Image (tube, rainbow over all chains, first blue to last red; front, side, top):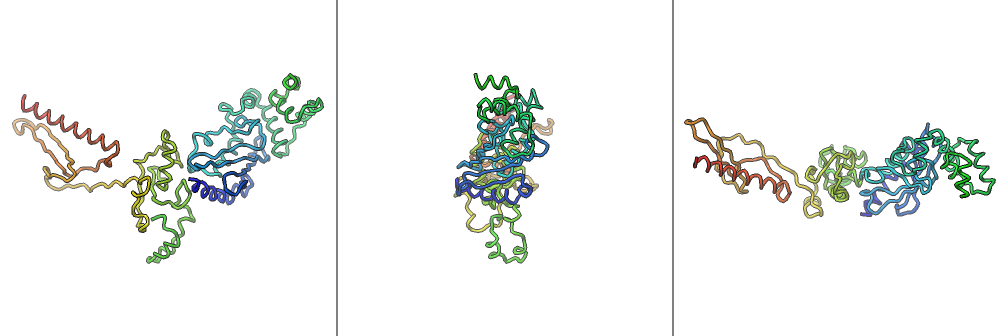
Length: 199
Length: 186
């Protein structure tokens, strides 16, 4: 059934390119290889969220059995979100698992992911650390997510007070990303973060 | 048939209106919701969504436990889709030779309000029976046995529903016979 898969992806590709959302630069899709089994998606961070103005890149793998089974989608851009792993970029979204329906397309998947950024589900988490922070310390979650969007997704909002804490760890010779993960996971408590890194 | 492509439509187009109609593949009205191509061996679900039968069959096979419409997630089943027969070209005439076969359309006989038609032996051996007791002495019991008379079409042979109906009709026949015996003996 690879024939259906390729024919469909070609149509869906055109659908995304022609869509209103693409015209507004909200979603985008590119080919990675010429046999339409791997694609690169891009979604804009939705407005009024910590992801605003960021550009998030997605790795989309089309299985042989597409469209009867969902595409395999993963965030390539690092992101701080309860339903997306901050380590691997794996996504916890029902339509990419058991709620997939064959009439869904690349366009609807990308729009659903954009909606996921705007409406996190901390009770069904992929990243337990982020989900806990989201529920217990929402303001810090927003700051952290903004910081990650600035750092990895090119969003313009800087978070200077977080940067200074990062710099302190960097001065101790800690790798920047490692320091960011430790601080983010410890609600930006410098002492606790230092402890986790050096213990 | 919906799958007649524009070029074929123009070749066959003895009706001038045909050529003026917009190409269905452009507005997407007759596209299968699974392969996104113009639907062939088209079937439509009870929720009104159009699919190629091979596409829908594969979808139902992929999720045997959760059979939902790929568009609106309404419950669907093989038995509850309606095939669409257009005027069709010769290429599409034998859907049964294709694997998997497309479900058959169900044809309801018009209501027959004619005179007494009992005791007609039908070719298919179907029968209906009804009986009742009138007020004595005007009638001890009146019964009519319709054999092969007009009846609503049942399920397609071979389906579980068909077997169930066969079983029920036999069961009721024996219950009726026992009841008549009881009336005669009592």
